[in-house]
Image (cartoon, rainbow, N blue to C red; front, side, top):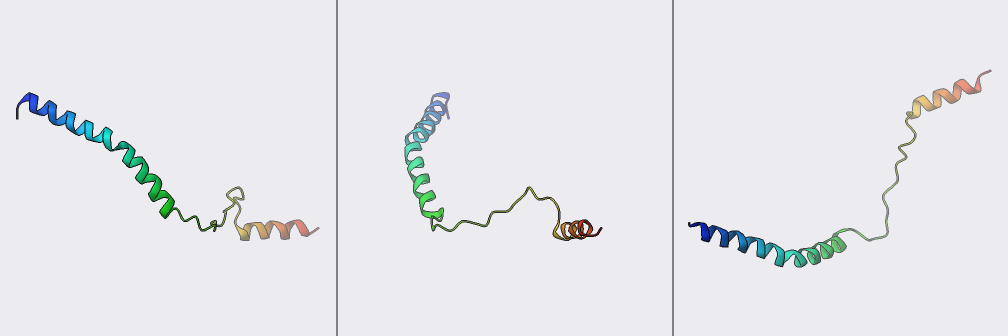
Length: 67
C-alpha cells in the first residue's frame, strides 16, 4: 500500500465517522428513550448521611434514656 492509498484510507474513515455522527446522536436518543424506563417508578432513595448502623443507633438511644 502506497502512502497515497494510506492517506486516502484514513481520510475515508474520518469522513465516514463525521458523516455518521448525526445518526449516532439520533440513535442514542432513541435508545435512551426506549430503555430508560419512564414508567414513573423511582428507585428507593438511600440516605448516605447516616453513618451509624441500626444496632449502634439503638444502643445510643438506650444510653440516653438511662439517668
